[in-house]
Length: 334
Image (cartoon, rainbow, N blue to C red):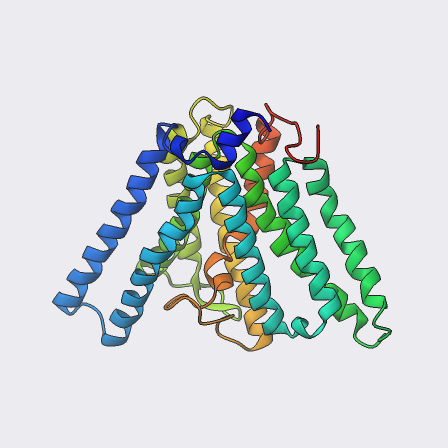
């Protein structure tokens, strides 16, 4: 491991080397302070009901914990970032497995956990070939191990749930971790988190102000077409605002690429949210857990990233590559 790689993995002293990083972190702090002040004003003026105030207060307090937990590992180094994403993947899988009953299938859940950990190692090792191979190999392992239980009844369902879990919690979140192999991963990931979370806020506000026609009334009755369109427009504008700072000096820092990323982040985030809403409706539950006050479980909070992470990763990878200027494997040899 050369010194440059060591600094990328563990060099927290270089957290603010990129000019965009302090601005993006400052923007997150400013947004939290502004939201806290707005909620306080609404409470004092009586513009919201008691139940709404309590829910918004819970959400705000949770964000004061979540934001440092999300931003901290990114600033500390790539290894910490990959570790944090892996922990999030395992926690989300745990919630999903308990909700759908897959946790009873020890062999399959063990294969999924091993697949998530192997994907994390491939990201940490900067071993792209292994990273991409983990998905088909993981499917083979799950389908093969499931046979050993010698229970043909329910085989398709068990394997399908295992494969679904590996693809979403291993592969989709794994792409978020692999971003850390890029030299300028900090501003890129911070921009991604800001725009994904901003997209949720934009959809909520646009829907409340202008929403009339329901988007998917059977899946998520509160979602409207106005909210979806408003979120897409505002998120794209936010990417156009942050992109030139976070992506300066890259091939992606062109207006047409930024517009494509904005639309991709907004549509992907909303579809991820709706996808998990469909699963919860199918299972007959409101939330996957009650771990985060006001938000539900980890999967309820981070569902918007599931589809966004691989879409943005491969778009940027197609345009210029992720970590393309340093392709040697870190631990397993070049």
